[in-house]
Amino acid sequence: MSFGSRIKEARKNKHLTQEQLGEMIGVAKSTVTGYEKGTSHPDEGKIISLMSVLNVDANYLWQDDIPAHSHVRRSLSPAELAHIKKYRDLDDHGKKSVDYILNNETERCKAQGTGGYASASSGAIPLPFAAQGGGITVSYLTPEQDRQVDLAADELERRLKGQD
Image (cartoon, rainbow, N blue to C red):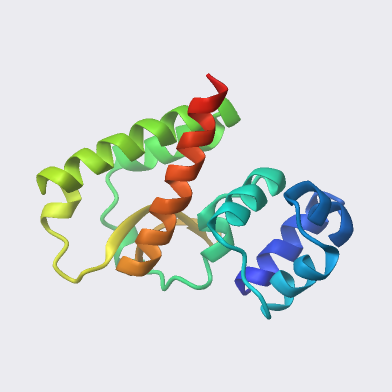
């Protein structure tokens, strides 16, 4: 499924029309149609809005566009699997809190060259949680995809701080 198909699927799961979704994120119905058909692409701010309104994350939207590395699944420790399962049980507030901490700690490790960033030799950045086929896998982002996710996360973080 493409990015656009994922938007359409999530919209239908929320029982929204294209017009209703467009109103909620501040675009015309025709723009939503373009997103779903893949003829136009939302900017980072609209992606944040889409994820919020549709209650989906980046992993859901791009899971079929990012190649999965099934061999990595076997390398997850029982503790990592337990963390993923606990994360999935959290409500939105809990997930936002965990995401905020993960983003800050990831930036710290990236800046210090420690953690998973110390061993990333391929130029691909680990994306921690990606569900595929009911199993848990770890996928990788290209540096450009990582930059886009960072921009979206920064925007979300700014919005969350504004709500405090």
